[in-house]
Image 1: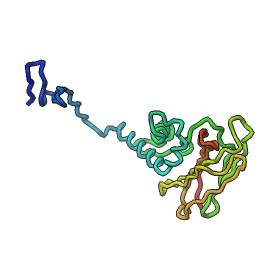
Image 2: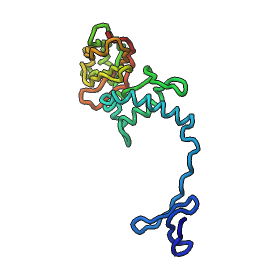
Image 3: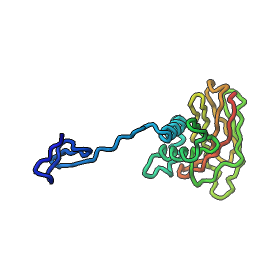
Length: 213
């Protein structure tokens, strides 16, 4: 039972109906007890949690790439949270309650730098993935010393190989070593460019998927 001290306008101590009163550092306060949620596991809540889980499993092994890739969007939030918001909005596919990452539509970096042109990869040699692309360093907002960023994601193991500073844009080729235990697993590949001074970054490009040799 709650008690009202000093009349109806005085402080309330305890609970009266759905109103709770108390005192903190000599200051009387009241608050309304929130209504109970009849069903905390509604279909909408379950679906949102499943989407969040899928996004989180993808983002966690890619945090090194994400921190660089979303640095320009880390305004009043972390780069991780900015990437999470982007993926929940545009990078989830499936039918409720089974959701998964929509790999081709995921952006692991966002920025104004010129992106990669005609990217391709070859994973037929054990322990490595080779990349090639067309040199577009003569185009506006592209520089020959921009550096390649590479992300190789293995969903079966929920692990990634990340190379933040690769070869320069004009070299148009790069080899990245991968663990031997990736052999036989499906991998998903993303590329982006970062300027030599690290200030600018491009949108990522989904290069494709394949089986590691």
